[in-house]
Length: 147
Image 1 (cartoon, rainbow, N blue to C red):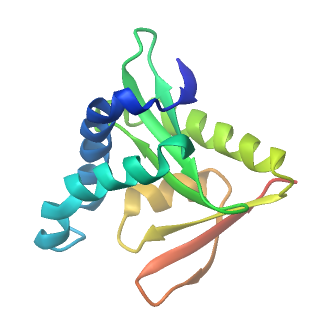
Image 2 (tube, one colour; image 1 turned 120 degrees about the horizontal axis):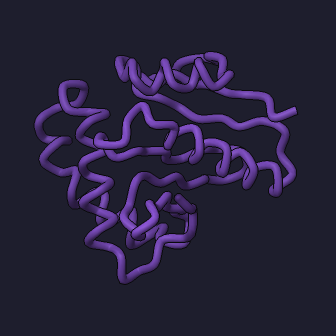
């Protein structure tokens, strides 16, 4: 496995993998309207932020998961294809994201998780994150010291 930047020509493959990951995370937690809009939303995210996505690939180059960072110490996305759950891929992606955040000069990582997304909450808690609050949109705010 290896992590590298997403290439623009990989858009279709990326959106397919991202959609499978997104559906595994949010179907049942979000409205039907949001679920229906997901393919367009993910395609637009790839168009706007392609250079921010780092993709975990298997030995043949197939997509396993991805992460992207926002401003400062913020982990914007971290998703793993459902076929790869519980195989250590999320940990590999998180460690790469944390290393990138350190190179930015930060000593903590912050993120948010939709309340009710128990798989993600459990993953981040097991990785050393603590809950730091909740926002008005129903997201659990989390952070982890990198020190």
